[in-house]
Image (cartoon, rainbow, N blue to C red; front, side, top):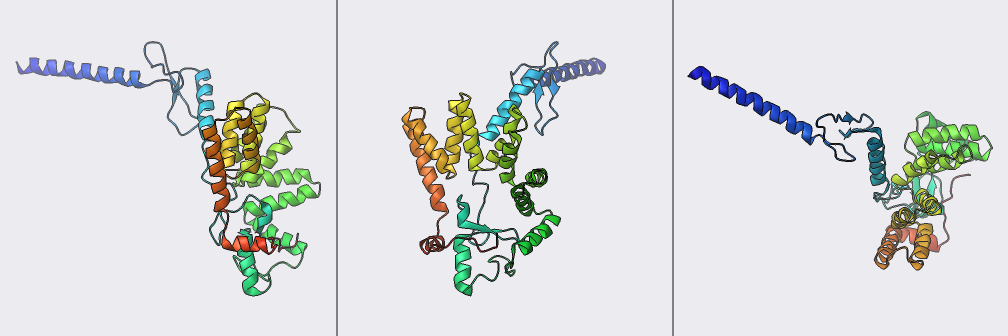
Length: 304
């Protein structure tokens, strides 16, 4: 009697295990089309990313890759690629004339903090951030950048790339900018894209622009919107323009205004973009920066 009961329990246990296996297989579905792994359908796992995804074919894998890319691409960045002033911790303006990058520490300081440093010291003798004396010549400035380059400072690497580009040494400029992009300088992605336009005309040429846009580069985002517009992708272009306008990009806002006049953008979306643009611009203002602007001060203290 006891042996019979044990045999029945064992059969039920085996059947339950088989049902669990069938249920697990049925729950394993293609991330793109949703087909389950049953009968003769075998799913393959994707090893290209950290996600545990299964696909029934290469086409489904490619389609889902594009969907994930768009999800990341059209996500609104929290701030622009420039970041905040390290002294006042307010967002830096997209206007490059309202900030200065110091060669001693590779920090970008806003005009308000540079102006306050000048007013406190009477003259610009030291960096507002690290208090290093200002370089006396462009040669001394370049030496400081090279010292920062040896420490793998991405901002200094970017500046050396700009110097080689101005001198006509495009090969060295490309090398430095590529390294800067690998170290996280988002400005370099946009520059690399422009340099590659003359080399090849493929879909991959927009990769650098997309990487810069994802990191909050408004100009790169605007260029992507322009490319989409020229290729007939008005809906995607509007999404790019709205995201860039929310970061304070004037060019994108003007394009969005024209699109609204043509009826391509709703009134609510345009009004929301206007409010977000104004909020982004207001966030870069401060009493010190306003005073510096009123007195005609521009952050260009280091020798160029």
